[in-house]
Image 1 (cartoon, one colour):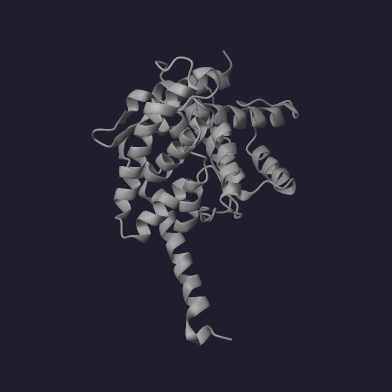
Image 2 (cartoon, helix red, strand yellow):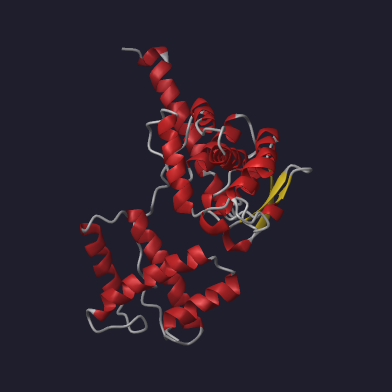
Length: 295
């Protein structure tokens, strides 16, 4: 077993890391290993100066500070593990630092844009009902796309109006779905889902090919197509509706800690980025409309 495989096994066993997280760590470690092999070094014999040299090369190649900071975080985790289990005597990245990354404001939508996006699917077809239901749940619950496509039929409780969501680190949380989303989900389960599946007893709530769960990439393509139909031209990301969920809740007076729980953030500071969105909007409002700023 390679040292990378041993480390990833430890992440899975000790922290319950998801497949998505494990794949990201594997990519980072493989890229670092490839760089080291060019200088006849290995992951466990890397010199303290080699990483800084590589980061400079990545900056010249156009990699953003955020990407390099994520890489450093991945490798630091690996070397902490390697030192803990006696694979190395000292951490080659112990004294490495990067400039602090300023949190970027997440892409979001105005409330009227969300309404147009929700109305975009053709609900006269089973596919349209499925897409409308997925968009309603995504916005009503603030789900990650990976959480949405990973839902199973037994994860929803229409009577109580909640969804059991498995988030990062395989942590479960219950999220209320709201009346509108619940109504669409009930319609979808009754009509569209049986029409879309060869075997409706399969667990996937939102099936793709072969009655398996839809992929994140497939749903992302669906979102982009519906955005075009809705006349939304601003850049979107797979998390745009999740960002809109959080931003709109705070706009209407929701408590930050409540939003943290609904989003499944383990750290409140992650949720606080949405307060920066509100501050940015307030600043723009004053700049555009205050009489002292008039031309």
